[in-house]
Length: 612
Ligand code: F6R
Image 1 (cartoon, protein in one colour):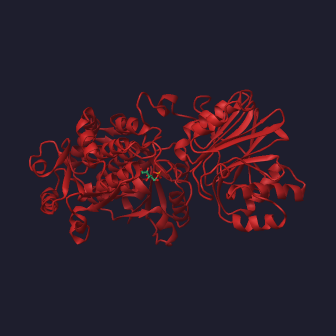
Image 2 (tube, helix red, strand yellow):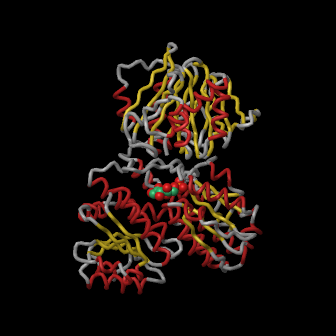
Image 3 (cartoon, protein in one colour):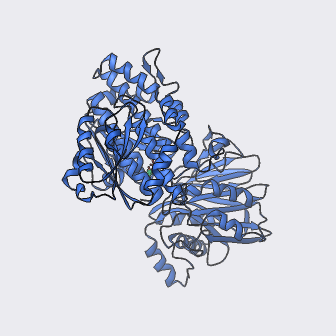
């Protein structure tokens, strides 16, 4: 939620910040703004809407500066508007601040400040924090850095902030707790951002700032301190991504690019790990902790949204292959119900961004209770990756489209490999089954390629059903979570109300919705539930519902019953979700396009949900 960028050095700051904001727009696009210090003047420009609107607004204005900060907002406190856009300016006119996160006790602080005569131009918690810092500085006659430190000890909540002072154009002060911050180290210049994508074209050397750290950033110096004012040694990491990975590469949308990247991203995830010739799966995070993972009395999977759907499939896979009981938890619920965690329990955290606040907070509290945390994360170096005791990256590359696609199939690939490796070590699967599933997994990239080769049929189906007001997605077994995922994708991209359900559960309620206008999408590939799902299709047909099916290529039963069919290649039922999800991703994409929506930036959403 919210993207932040900062620059200090010898170059013009504005174009660097603007470009960075465009890269971070996936984090929020309710408003955008910049604060620049040039010729001893603080210039702040901000606008409701996307970064392009800020860019247009700033044309002809004074943007000359070698230091600046910029923000793209996902609204929490205060509606999306010009006045609630960041940066905010302090009452004395000297300081500008941008903030990603939430200050939970801002109302109390605001009341204190109002009594002292402070006025506020916005409804945001961020402006309160800024004036609180100004007030502390005035009362204690201290430096801005000291005032910030005192303020941060009093605030409750999450933040990544960048702060500048018109009277000191040589410094950006930054701080983080709960919201990410990366600092890129250049030659006589520094870049600050919520993730590495705005930095990558300038430098590959970065420092990931930790919670409760304050950074004092000058063009030629980076000082890190903790809230106790003790210096910390910055740990420099080399970025392992290149610019091409975060650009559209000829596709009209990131979402379509990322859907089409899946043969490669799944292959990258398998590469070096799935060694079929040797009959081995190499995953160091598992090997180093095999006893903990083998002997876990229980696995608890914690995640949100699409990642939670990957977790649901993993529940089926782990229970089948490892015979370990698995629970799958929404991170936001898990955290607040004081969960019971026993000695030896393993928590698997699944997250694309590695920054989702609900997941992060849930893990922190589980870690305090002694659980072993295994992270399945896409964003390298992210907070969840760093908090985990061990983990396996999904290697899907940067995912920019707000709807998760290739990260999901990366998560599934990692989770299946994990279950295979642990199950084999526990001897809960036979050698033959182990090898057969490895073979099936190895063939997935080619099979995904086959689905993506010709999408005209899916486009046709999308156009046919785009005006439906509701959709029902049904599946059984391994395909039930795929039905949930298909419904989520359609909701977020096309704003059509869609519900996912276990196909057999339908007769206990949702069947009342069925009538001739309702499209019912069955994920009905050939698996051990196949005969049962054929009966469920009959039940819908008998009530005149329109049946769309995802079916196995050689099936000749379901296609004769369904109004429309999307085919996927045959695969073992454990592997099948990696294939059956692809037509659903494409269907939601093409429905969104047919309805004229911005599929990369669906309304009200943001890619990285860093608020609880
Ligand atoms: C849906 C989607 C979200 C995320 C969820 C968790 O397409 O992208 O539901 O899956 O916000 O995000 P991560 O995986 O970053 O923790």
